[in-house]
Amino acid sequence: MHNLRLENMSLSQAEKKKVLELINTNIAITPTLIKDLFKHGEI
Image 1 (cartoon, rainbow, N blue to C red):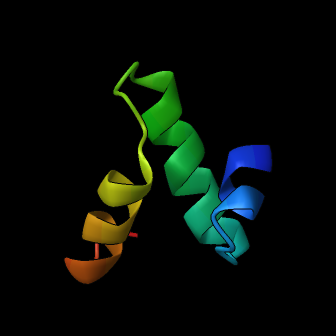
Image 2 (image 1 turned 180 degrees about the vertical axis):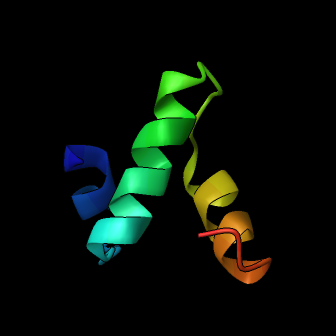
């Protein structure tokens, strides 16, 4: 969550849950990945 604050991103509870699910899958979470997921409506 600290990294998301560093990126100046404000996430809803549902979005935070989705990000945490991704983290638990051992996928490398990058600002680009998160932004792409937003673009495609997956978060």
